[in-house]
Length: 377
Image (cartoon, rainbow, N blue to C red; front, side, top):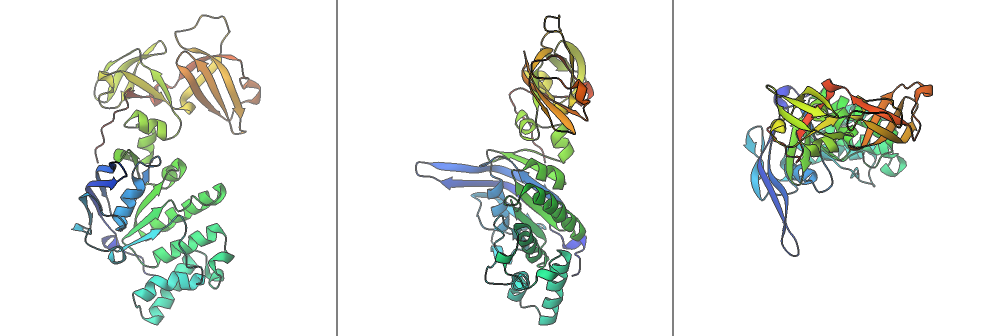
């Protein structure tokens, strides 16, 4: 199977997408002005809670839904008037959507038969697709004779063999067990990068988004909260919502905050005054400091000892995982989650222990407390 050149891959543009669904009493605004530019060969994940609009966005790209306003462009041309079967795209579904009465070989060949490819070319391309997905020995099996992971590989082979400009994924791994999900997401990413196909992936699983994506698009209530690389979304979230949705987060109230140069703020948190990186506008409003659990540092404290304001706490949960230990500490700032990797077993704090709470200043991020963030594509 000839691998596509960069010129054959798809440049997807979403321009002002709106989608309004009628309800019994009024209407539901599923999308509120979605603007997104997806580069050729880029793997973008739409991530967010149920009802945020990610699946609606994917279905509009595929042509299964029509937007109430806005446009979808592929390589500069609108595809709104192009039916799903005529768009150079392929979809991998959560339910696999295999034909139960067909063999693996017949399932993979189905789309090529509709294109009326010459018999010799069809056979060659199906065989190469089966080989690339490790399905050669299963060619004659029915879907009912295969595991969930094997069926998902058939669905991938069927999509890939069509040589789409854009490959769409609708939560394709949600029916698999945890170990198989890890294997399959690596396989999907490897294949997508090798072929250079533009990928748009929908999931609510943060681990999938973080491990597979060139860029994560975090959605909430029909809008984009942030679109950035996995590391940027995790380290520098655009809003409290994004910070809380991606990974685990501690939000420490800033007693004071003021601008301290480009992208920085002078803050006082837990009695410490220091300079931290800050989101736009964070220092001009009530602010909170984002500290991830792995950046929290705990040390022993005596129950009656004097402590800097808000720093002392009591361990209310201590869970040892082997490679790490995780704590929940009750404090004046609320419950704080801390994670320590490769702990010395003898030094693990038990439940009830009093601790002094600190953190790595260089790994903190100041956010507006109201959760508002500015998204710019």
